[in-house]
Image (cartoon, rainbow, N blue to C red; front, side, top):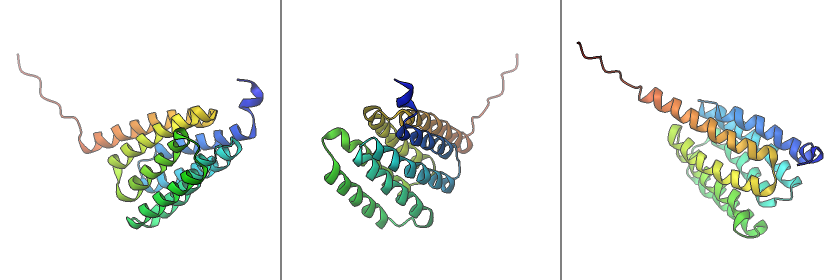
Amino acid sequence: MAIETLLAPAQLIGYVALILGVSAFLQKNDTRLKVLVACESLAYVAHFFLLHNLPASGSALISCLRNLISVKSRSPWWVAVFVAANLAVGAVFGRGFLSWLPVIASCLASGAIFLLRGVLMRMILLVCTLLWLANNVLSGSVGGTVLEAIIAIANLTTIVRLLLERFPPTRKPCPAK
């Protein structure tokens, strides 16, 4: 890939999303996670718009709003609102199955963000990350591809940390000789 492509405005915005996204998934606090993901999503709006991937750009905008609202409200009603908005974006801008990857990811994330917490929320978000990873590879998003790969690793690390806090390993005493 040429240096001009790596330094194109769309890619530079993708690198900003990369920094915000990695920071988000290293958080053990759900509120900080949601706020940083909202910021990452806002960068993704411009990034995917410049890459001419309108379903991803639209889903990212909805994700930004969803994450900000989820900080103050956990009403299941919001899940229906954001799923419907994502499906509308897919219906208007979708051009084949692959363009639905970010839409599906955003729909799943809506349920996770409003209805779940902790490890289970992060596990569903991991599935969403893998869908976004596929979208980013297919879109030619350098920063986005690196971001989703790192988010997957960071999210898995945080899931393990949270599980170890909840279920610390027990040590059995050594038998006497």
